[in-house]
Length: 175
Length: 137
Image (cartoon, rainbow over all chains, first blue to last red; front, top):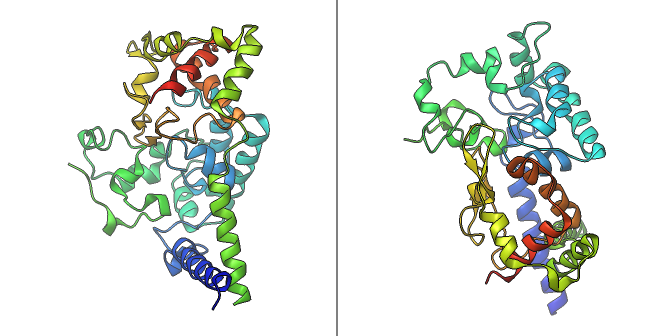
């Protein structure tokens, strides 16, 4: 085998491996994989922009009306300026609306909506009744532990939050 | 095999785009900001840039904040956002991707100058800031 072919086969192996590793973390992650696994979504601006400061929170955690409020106030985003150029902002909002809790696209969203009042548009996921109920056994002091900081830091306890997995069995609350 | 080459090609493209930084460099951005400020490049000051980085201002909830609040006292170290996400070091010596994308640089000056100084930064301040970070070894 000459070097070119060898190179290609190495690349192919690496490529296949990375595709498997990144696109199939679990067979369930495709589509809506169940109660605590979020649909696997990809959207360049959502991932790049939102995740530069925090976890790219899944659209299915809040209704469309909430996302419109969030994206309409990025100059004052929970005390920080997170402003975007108008095109990027509109692009991300479209994606959030299309996959929002009330879009009917995910089981997670349906569960969030079951407990949402008709005119509710909370700004924080942690303000939704669904979230509050899910976390009612976590004492207030736990949230402010140094390794956690606040309820915004999903990945502090949900170690696979970045992959959209929120299974209770994987929760490890840092001391 | 062809399918595999296709996949690996995609992955290779991904790898390339991951390292394909913008066309800009710290030097080209310094030149741009000096020109915008109407001063010669040599008039940019690393000393002023460092002062801009370290000077504390009273933040919105009474706490003093500076660039170092999130980026740490050393721009060669990784910092942390308020919700605990890693911020890569600001100094190009520690993170070569810094100051290679003019749009990204402008976005973060716009946001962070508003947050820390409660105003936009001037072109000269931006030039000074990069001048300092670019000579950190």
